[in-house]
Structure formats: C-alpha cells, structure tokens
Length: 283
Image 1 (cartoon, rainbow, N blue to C red):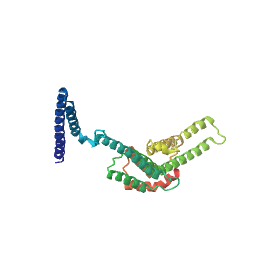
Image 2 (spheres, one colour; image 1 turned 90 degrees about the vertical axis):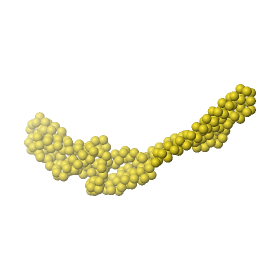
Image 3 (tube, rainbow, N blue to C red; image 1 turned 90 degrees about the horizontal axis):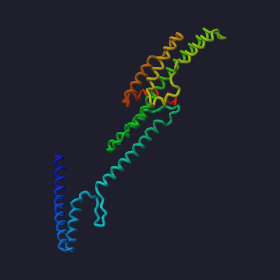
Image 4 (cartoon, helix red, strand yellow; image 1 turned 60 degrees about the vertical axis):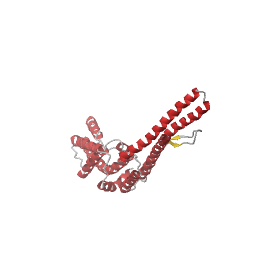
C-alpha cells in the first residue's frame, strides 16, 4: 500500500514536470522562430515564458525560489547540509556521552569502592535514550573501555592472591637454598645456578592495568601461575598452593575477555561489586 502511494506521488510529480518541459521546449522553439523573423520583442516574451516553464518543471526540487534575481535553494542541497549537521552533532553527542560515562567510571578509584551497578545502569540508560531519539551512535569504543575497567576490577583481587601464593613459595625456596648452601656459601657455582632458577620464577605483573587494556590479563596470570608452580616444584621441591576458587574465577574472566564485548549480567555486576573495593585500592 505504501509503495503504491509513493509510486502515485512520483508519477503525479513527474507527469506535471513533463508537461512543463514540453511547454518550455515548444515556447523555446517559437522564440527562435520569432527571432529569425525579426520579431525580437515577441521572441523575448516567448523565451521568458519558456524559461519559466523549465523553472516550474524543476520547482519541486527547490526549498525556496525568490525570483529571477536568483535566490534559489535546492532541497537536495539543504538535505545534504542537514545530513552533515546531524553527523557532526552525532559525533559531538558520542564524545560527550563517552566523557560522561568514563568520567563516572574512572573518578574516585583510589581506595574507594567502585559502584559498577550504577555505572552499567548509566551506560544502559544513555544508550537507550539515544536509540529512543533515533540516534544511531556507535558506543563500541565506550563499551570496550568499560569492559577493560570492569574485567580489571574483577581480576585484581584474584591476581593479588596468586602473587601472594608465588611469593610464599619463593620464600620457602629461598629458605631451602640458605639451608643447603649455608652461610658463608660453601658452593658458589651451585648457589649461583639455584639463585638463577629462583629469580626466573615469575610473578604477576606489578602494574597490570595497561596490560589489561590490550591483553588477556586473567589468562596471562594463569600462565604465570602454572610456570611458577612448575619451577618451584622442579627446582626446589616446593608445592605452591592457592585457593582453587581463585583459579576458577581467573579462568572465567579469561573466557569473558576472549568473548568480548562482555555480556553484562546481574551476576557479573554483583561479582564486580564484591571485588571492586580491592581493585580500587590497587589503582
């Protein structure tokens, strides 16, 4: 039905334009004939009528047409200007929205609890309102940064526990070294080799946030933990231990990172709220 109405409107407009074009061509031909017969005055009048016929044939394309002094504005031009303006406004709105959301997420992160429930509600509300207004804005960049902070906040307490477990294991290894080689050291070469093994036992990153914006922080921590456990066991016969739930959470966070953008659920928000206080202290 809508297609038929549109076609009917197009047919009506183009039929009228066709008549004006035919009339214009006829009058233009007549004016040429009158010039040929030296009837210049009449030719000028007829030519003017023909010119106006061509103008009327295209009048639907104009927003405003003042007169032969030419103050015409094409609808197409105005539509292009409006589209350009809308695009610029969309960019401004996108920047403003990004700053509002990220300002909320990054503010007050030193030793204070991060209210992720409030942050995600703000994000959802702003995106929804833009959609209601018909503004198709790409918020994927904002969502990516929010995901970075969100996953970092949830990973930080677990990373701290892994770091503590590795340091405890290394402390036991150091104690064994001291007992084995004595003081003063009886075997310098042997001690040097064991010391190198001790120093090569890795620990989680000291400043993990920048790493987390480009890499799988939780997955990287798991790899470090596995390598540290192996080195401590082979080199010093020390079994480093950490709560199994820590490993389970890091595995879950690694999967979330690999399947980004993060599908934020109430369960995840609750988890983020529980861990954000410790994460804020690190930042």
